[in-house]
Image (tube, each protein chain N blue to C red):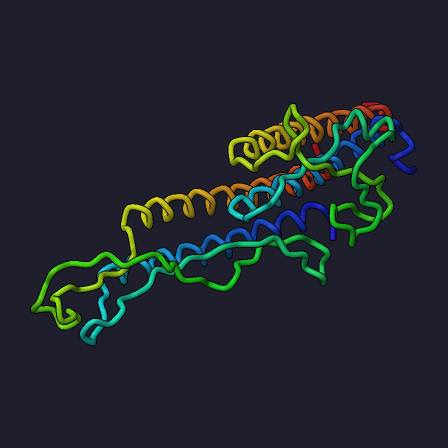
Length: 128
Length: 138
């Protein structure tokens, strides 16, 4: 049985993929913190990925600059971080650490939900 | 390459860049009082390092690379010490253009950036083990 056909598993897998790409972008921003002229990047919000109306750099091939999407998974768009006036933001460590914390919490929640849903399925199949 | 191993590689290149920076800082600090051995000669010139984001063709990941080490061309401070071997005919000795305070601040910053990169590696590892934990019998 393909677990992806169950909608919750598909959703969880999509979100995990989105967070992996986000973690990739955070690592890139942190590593380039002291690089001259570097503009920090972030992924588009998950809501936008779900509605498939993503704008910006779409990474459909693993060699693309946005990078980091495995074959067969839906592409996650990457955009340059901008402030309220639409100018490119400067990379700051605190912003990146906050994003890293978000990714971590999100991923923990995601795996916990997947685990408990999986347990639910096991319960129905085992009948115990 | 998947996003997580790419993140790991990028953080690794960040660690490398920051340790190169620390090396330059320690070279500067160690030579903070290195004068010339000939009369009137130039002392140690402060080294500087800069970084650039570069696409690694093999893996398609944008890594950090340190550029060639440059020299700080600012003026040397001088000190009046006629008995010194590097003193010129007016008795002035040229000292290296290394400011200990700036080097210390740079060292702290390199340290913090190194820690931040390490934190990224730690988090990627945790995310991977969270995924593997899904397969564990519960």
